[in-house]
Image 1 (cartoon, rainbow, N blue to C red):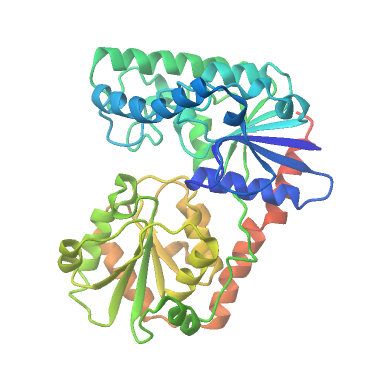
Image 2 (tube, helix red, strand yellow; image 1 turned 90 degrees about the vertical axis):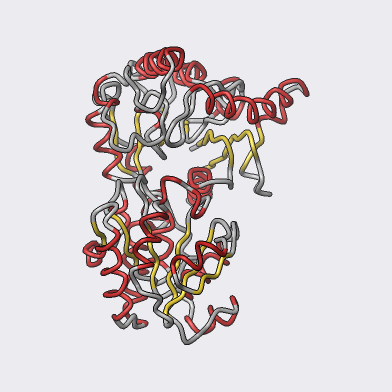
Length: 416
């Protein structure tokens, strides 16, 4: 069975990492030959093929300029409150031999100048079983990657609150109309890594009548597993006599979706507890913010090495996810696989990522005081080695590579 995964990148960002892990898991399964076809390759894997290498110098230059000019134009024209993309990709994976020879096609996150909606239709016209994986809400909306409190995708997105000008509204309307055409293909199935996203598909105007299923993102359990806390802290040169709270986010405290402002309010409520310190991964916390929260803070910027991340999870007493918008944050699953308890906001697909016994650790979004109380409550608990392995085993059963690939195989074998 030949599988092809079409993705803008292979290792940069949450969606590409999830795609890369799925590709690796499929290749570890007998009878499956899986490859990724990407625009930006950063890994050394021979199972990842850089499509842009097949194109002329002019097209490579165009792609580079696109990555600079389009975001600037969108910022001036759209001025969204979050991430917003107009489909303007210039590449054509539908012409690739890898796509033509594949038995099954997966389309993942493909914005950023890779492919456009017309190209997705060309891929669907090949007639092969095609799965579009919704790493965020972009396919369902007029262009935003998460609709936040807006329900426009249920109707038509024709009065998008994220954009102001008439030109921008026309762009949104055209994009929604192009997306609507995809729903006409019988060989299309939509996949979601959380039941929350699956529910968004079910109520969306464009895709509520399209086949859709939940398939979780796989986790490499040989990497994300409990490590002795004392050893982990020694490796990272972190204090062994403190309670450590961990915050990890792509973009760190500057990412508007990750709710740093509300987490900061919760941390301030700890009243400068000298026995508790903070670890931030994703960016470097400035001195002013460190003084505001009143806790000693350790900032480590961006970390791409998975083993290093596993050590951080094992070193922490608590992981906090304060997202205001999220689909299936892998950091929540990674932390629990390493034995670290999790608290945060009951946002999007986050409840799906929690082990059942600890879903009560989540509080209502933006409720900083409730979050502060949960932080204090959980830090008082004993986190035994038995507790850590229990979390790991629960995650393994649901998000382990074999379990996830088996779900995909069952989908391939369905007669619908």
